[in-house]
Structures are given as C-alpha cells and as structure tokens.
Image (cartoon, rainbow, N blue to C red; front, side, top):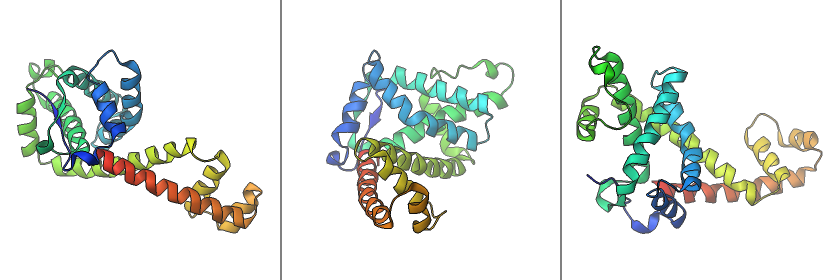
Length: 216
C-alpha cells in the first residue's frame, strides 16, 4: 500500500516542504535525507523519551523510524483526504514507539519481532487506536512538535539577520532581564534593543506561520 501525505488545501503545503518530501522518494538523495533527519530527529527522540523510554531506547526508536521511512518513501504521494504532514509523521512515530512497547511487553517469541518496519502497518495502526496511552502520547507529540517548530523558525532567521540582532531578540524575549539590562549587557543602546526586537520578532512570526502552513 502506498504512503500518503495530504493537506486540507494543496496550496498550503509550500514548495519548500513539498520539494523536500518529493526528494525523499529517492533513497540516494543524501542531502535531502540529511535535511529531513536534522529537522525531525530531535522531535522523534523527545517524544520517545517523554513516552517513558530510556535514552538508548529512544535512540533506537529514532533509528527504526527513519529506517521505516526510507523503505516507505519510494511509494510516497500526496492524498488530500489523508491529513497533514504533521499528522502523518505523528502516526509514523507513534507506530514505531508502539512496536517498541509491544515487543518489550511480549513473550520471548514476540521479542524477536523486528522493529525495522517489517511488521504489518495496518495492525500497528489498529492497535494504536485502542491503546489507552495514545491520547497521552498525542499530547506529548503536540508539545514537542510546537517546540521543534519554534526552533526551526529561529534557525531560519540566521540567514536573514545579524548574529547581534538575533542575540538581542533572544535575550529580550525570554523575560529574564529588563530591556535596559539587555542593552547594558550587550553594549548597545535601548533604541537598538527595541528596534531589533521589533524587526526580528516580525520575521520570527512570519517564519512560524510559514512552517505551520507547510506542515499543518
């Protein structure tokens, strides 16, 4: 069965994300897969950790998730009726975590079941729907997805503003220091702090919106 990714509005999946996901159909596109891995491995790892897995177990889930994706992406195509990219990646991640849990709870025979995507996907998803921990895992996913999205948005600013402006924005939005203290600490005047905070803040909001449109 082919994998599907969709969006309620095909125009809301912007070319950057569309192009990247299409490139992943080629397993030899190392640059595309590196970009995809760098963008989402921390998200998958943190979701696995917050679901109760230890560090090594969470790393195993990251590995098996990407092995699964490498095997599935050659048959990938968009389907408007199947949900957003965000939902698709959530289901894939949940299924890999669920397979791990199922293996750990199973008897010796089931413990030999592979985690590398060879299990029946339909059975995995059916069991997920009945999993009492699924709602809690979805809450973890939403929280970590949001944190990952904000981190991506901030990273995109590096090519658009100076490092000083980026530092001013970060320090002035954490709330840890009054703005006059931020200015003093960085050796700039207060007007520069206000200007950088406004300019970078506007760009940051635009990047967050762009990422939401690409993925949700």
